[in-house]
View 1 (cartoon, rainbow, N blue to C red):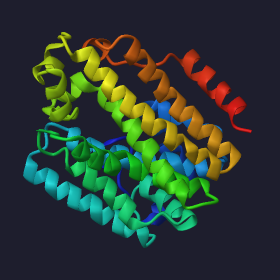
View 2 (view 1 turned 30 degrees about the horizontal axis):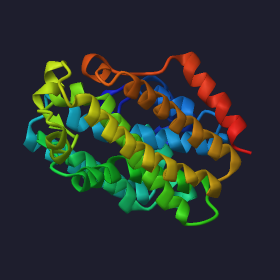
View 3 (view 1 turned 90 degrees about the vertical axis):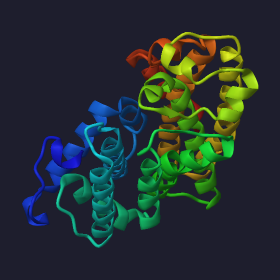
Length: 297
């Protein structure tokens, strides 16, 4: 939660130093989202810092819902406060390091308020334990919690054709679906079952499997089905690199490539997410980054 991390909310913007605010956003991203941090490390500094501020804001919102100590009433009030935090940020009014940096980013890169508010809309869907009945329902959720982030990132990068926003949205949905497969067990522990019921029923997989940690007949086929869906979106979404600057394209390929590596590991061992969280080593991530520099010309 933003006021519970390593700083205290200031009473006014004059109490905040921009260098410290930028360092804070960078530190949050580096410590809590290594994939995100390394994925965008080669961006020009102003864009990189804007991306890290965007992540830090998204982390604040996500943490509100994931903190199990919150009552529903208290959580609703805190999300309203976050919405007000966004409204004030859009006016250049801020009282914490994240919004200090983000307020500059929304002004410089033309990030619209409805995309920041859309991120809150998506996270708000996680307040109540729930499951998704259809792919259309899950896709709508993915668009809010991930695709909207992709759109904002593209605005920060700059783009030559508005179709870049659509491609970024497809890529965001793909990466979120990979998250769903990677985090299936820990999400189930919080009462969240993202893999659509229609897909589970198609392959005869009960949702209790996610908590039990033991694969059953049909599980491998279910994972393969969701992986193909993620890869199809990945293939079209990665086309965003045609419409953004070279260095940004390298970063997108790096970020996406890290997630592709995670998906490849899941496909190779479909029951692994039921046992542990799948990730890449630092060495594997570095190889992805190097390949990304070679791939984007």
